[in-house]
Length: 288
Image 1: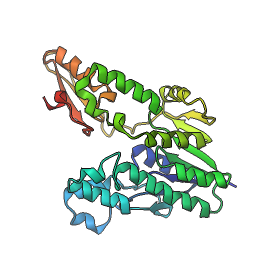
Image 2 (image 1 turned 90 degrees about the vertical axis):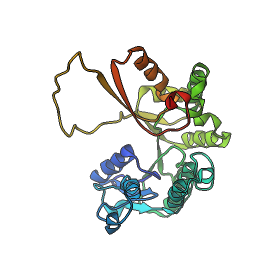
Image 3 (image 1 turned 30 degrees about the vertical axis):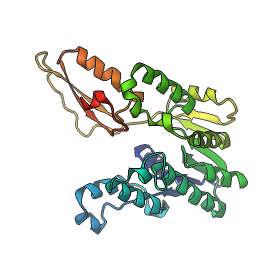
C-alpha cells in the first residue's frame, strides 16, 4: 500500500502550500487540513473590499485539488474580524481565545479526532504548535509522526534573543517570544518528543535540536526553495547611482535588522534601503 499522509497547518504559507502540492502530485496526500481555503474564482471576489480579498487570496491553493482540502474556519474567521476591529487583546499572537496560537491548537484538536477516524492512514505531517493532539492520536494507531520545524529550537532562539536585546535594548519589543508563557514552550517540547521524524530547513536548525537530548526522532534537512524568476532583467549599473537594497522579512531583532540598518547608516547615503515586512513590535530605530 502506498503511503497516505494527512497534512495540517492553520494558515498555509508558501512552504506549506508546496508541501501539499508535492504530496498531491505523488498521490500520497489523503487530506490537507487548514483554517481557510479560498477559491480565486469565488463570485464574492468581485464585491469584497480589496483588503479583505487580498487576505483571503493568501489562502488560495490553485494547484491542489479541492478534494484533498478540509477546513476548520471558525476561529480564524473570528481572529481576522477581531484584528480588523482592533481587538488585540483577544486576537494577539500568543494570547487570547482567538489568538494565532490558539487557532493552531483548535485545528490540532480537530485533526486529532480526524486521525482516529481515517482509514488507511500511514503518516501525519504537522507543524509547530499544531501537532500535539494529532501526534497523540497517531501514536494510538501506530501511525508515523512527522514534524516540520521551521526555525531553530526555541531554547537556542531565546538565548540569541536575550544576547541581542542586551546589545540592542531599543529592539526588545520586536522579540515578543521572550514574553510567551512557559506552557507554549512545554507544548513545543512535547510535540518534538512525540515525533518519529523531524524535517528542518538548515544545518543550523538541526544542530539546535542538540539542546533537546531526550528527542529520539531522526531528522532530514530539506532547504527552502524559491520560484524561478518571472522576468530576467540586465541592468547597467553606475557608480554614480545609489545601490538599491530590498529587505523582505519580519522587522525584528532576530532577523539581524539592527545590524543592517547600522551598516546602511555608515555608508553615508550610498545605499537606498527599502523594508518590506510585518512589524512584530515597536522600536525607536524603526520609527525614526
